[in-house]
Image (cartoon, rainbow, N blue to C red; front, top):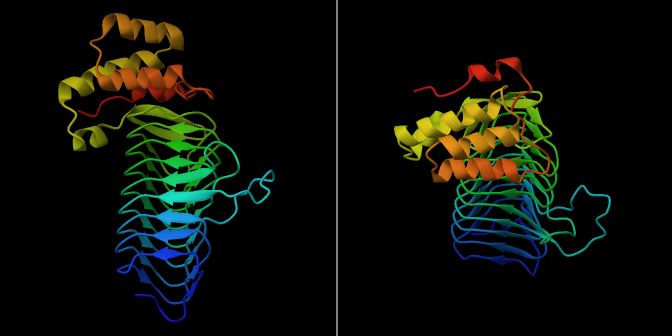
Length: 268
C-alpha cells in the first residue's frame, strides 16, 4: 500500500505488500522488500532495504556521505531483513572507496537519532541506542550494543557481543565479548549476559575470562600476553577470535588506560 501523498521515483522497486506512509519521499535506485513499512515523512534514496523492516518518521537513508572527497559517484546503502530504524536516524550511502556501500545487517535496532556514516559495516543483531554515532568506515560486529550518545572515530572496529556504556567514546578498537566504559572507552570485564544468551557454556566463559585478564594485566605487554595465552590456556573459537582481533588491529585496542580496568571480569 502506497499513500497517495508519497513521492516515489519511477526507478524505485517496491514490493507489493510493502507499506509506504504519508509524505514519504523515495528517490532513485531504491528497492524495498516484502512487508517492510516506511512510516510518514521518511526519506530514502540509493538504498536496498530487506524484508519486514520498519523505517520510522524522519529517518534518512541513502543521502550523500559527509565526505568532502565525494563527487557524486554511484554508491549505496544495503540494509538486511527485520531491521528497525527509529525516528531521525541517518544512514549515509558509501563514499567512492572500498565497495562503495554502507551496510546494516539483519535484526538490527537503530534507535532515535543514531547515525551510521559512509562505508560503515554494521553486522547482524546490533543495537545502537539513541544518538549513538559511527564515523566513516566503522565496522560493528554481530551482537554488539552501543549505548546512548556513544561516539566512535572513523575506521574503528567494535567486536562481537561487546557492550559500550552510554556517553562513552573511542578512537580505538573495542575488544569482542567485553563491557566498556569511559572517554576513552576501556574494557572493564566480560559481557557475560550476552555470552549466556548465546549459549556459551560456563567452562568456555571462564577460559575467555582468563585470556582477558592476561590481556589487561600490567605484568605483560600485548605481545607477551598473547604468547602466554596461547601457551597456557585451552584455546577455543572465542579466544582465537579475541586474539586475532587484537593482532589485526590497525588503530590499537583500548585495554589498559584506566587503573581500575583490572577490577572488571566475570560476573558469574
